[in-house]
Length: 142
Image (cartoon, rainbow, N blue to C red):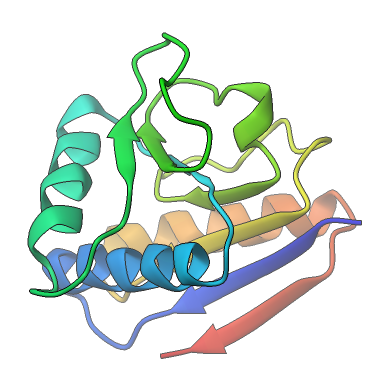
């Protein structure tokens, strides 16, 4: 059964949303897992890719941009706006504005919503979509 968590950030700053995503990815990696981060665009993917190298001085999180080609290493975080490869569907971080439509293979889905009005509206739409799919949703305020 899919475990779905919405992280509701108290900020409306996009930079804080990106930083929280990096912290979440670090936690996932430190727990021995890897995941796919679904973004809306190449620009978003590149921004997360850059921040994962720089957001914390002593942190190392193996990661790569996904452009449709099979990754060279299995155990790393993949970031991209394309549908994920099968092996990376177990844990998904949805950083995009759209709900994850195909989640049959997904065991854990993490959504990040901040208080910028448009992103908050989009987050509410995703929440309603998942509720309509009869999914149980956990909400964590940060």
